[in-house]
Length: 221
Length: 222
Image (tube, rainbow over all chains, first blue to last red; front, side, top):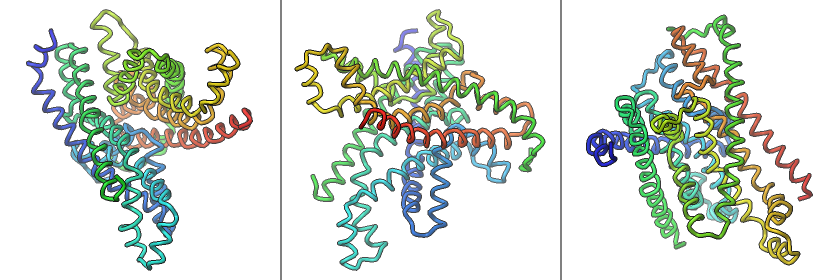
């Protein structure tokens, strides 16, 4: 079957799958960013308990596979009384997984803000919270945005795994089409190209734009 | 189904999971070996100075890096038969995972080679060394130590990505855990054990990589 005919027949299914993938991407990105900030700051906290929780979370999620985490959250958590619908289980596990990598980026960026900035804020007798919010974090964000761009692409790739707990994303639709038609090259090939377009022509330019905006807001453009 | 941890069941399934762990390690090792070689080829192909080749390889690397591994595994596994090439799950799994990580490793190599000071290249030219000698004796030994951290990260990465091979039926850890789960209707023990086995291997490996990096630096007198 030529490719245009294939796209005419299955285009709508692939498009709906792409929408689900985008939704999963956005939701898990939100979770990843929030939890990365919490765990990254937690790892720098002076409170021993908070630091321990952050370290355990980071090592636990960085030390095991996303697929293991996904299956654990989807199949084992219900046994402990927490049942998540598959769509939620999908973006929660991807978000938690990527968040653990992001936490290290946050920690590294905060630590690489020059020491003088900390001292100046201290000399102006800012409270620790205000110092973090007004002085340190804005500069740390500029430092960590480029690696976050790579991490978000990893996150997009991670969302493909939610198809394995039958969330109807792009990967899932490609598999379904393949199973019913055996047009493997067309089905999987189109899905590969769609993922590539999302990563290369949406996420990467968006992050570049964000980097420029943040640099300008700090007066560094 | 219950949330009570059953120790007798744990001991019963542990040997099976251990065997599967061996398979996982073989898969990760073989995939990594392919990635190391292929990555070097991809990195050197970008340095030939012939523009179309450089651009094509760059785009290829970008493509591999920004599409999901699990989709690539399916692609390799199912597209072959459509054109009359039959690959076993193991073969297609190794090809897909090796190819995926070769793209990442080529970037590590590239950064390592770029970090070698220009003067080193110029000296080689001044001493009239052949291209092969330049790379083998001067550039690559110096490019290696800064690359080891990145190479080690991807070794752990490839290990953590082997569960994806279960989708085409490679009998590694995840696949075995799924099988145990569907035979016994108990998911708590197998999935938790798989997670623990991954932790028990990947955390020490990350530490070993750091030690190895220091050792190579000392060996090369850097």
